[in-house]
Image 1: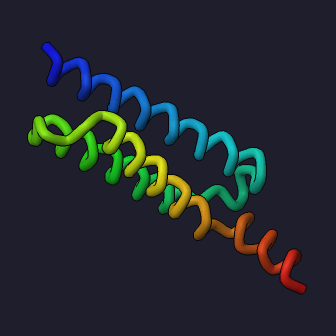
Image 2: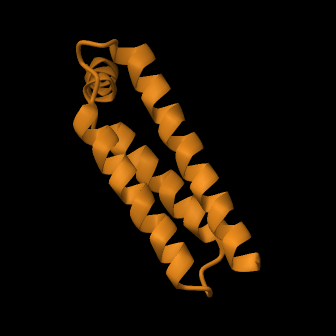
Length: 91
């Protein structure tokens, strides 16, 4: 039961973080420049993290959620709206 509960919590965090990413990118870029490739990579990465959490009981729930949160930030950094914002700040 503990293993299933931990996996469900990680899956819920993955869904919430992916939804937050999608909403933020839609709000920043609109429909014309939505980063579908990054969203797909985020979904595949979430599936991998959830499957690893299910397979290895030694992995803590907080570790899996933290790894996926950092992965989400990494995906967000390599989208056009963020890159354009960094260009504006630098120049």
